[in-house]
Image (cartoon, rainbow, N blue to C red; front, side):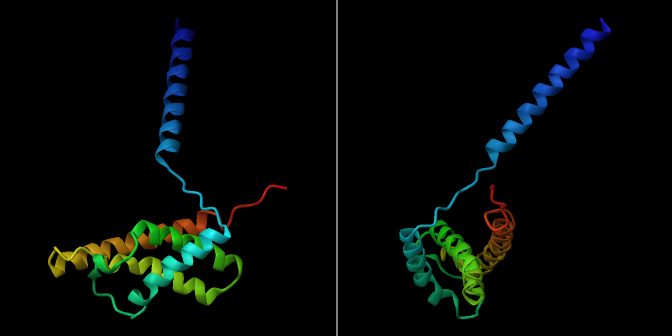
Length: 147
């Protein structure tokens, strides 16, 4: 009887651990960016539309209507260019792209009062910094290539 309880416990624990692993892998979505001449051209165009708006050195919120592309499009373009400039060892451009990525937090909805906009921008800035740091430390910068 004791053997049956041990084996049943091990079976339940194994099922539980595999379920947790499956749920964790499913919850973590990884976006793979394919770098092609077309994606580079599109990314450069998106970033060139955003850079003049955010390279003023200020931190005050801007109207989200003035952003010609969605924040997700700008983030994707910045990630593509971050990797491209990292591979080409163009560190000045890499710094510009990093600051542009974080500066999109300035674009907030003007329907809220200024204090709410600043609070949201500050929270979003921290989240964007973490997102970019995670991207640069986990994908694809330090991936070892298989022989």
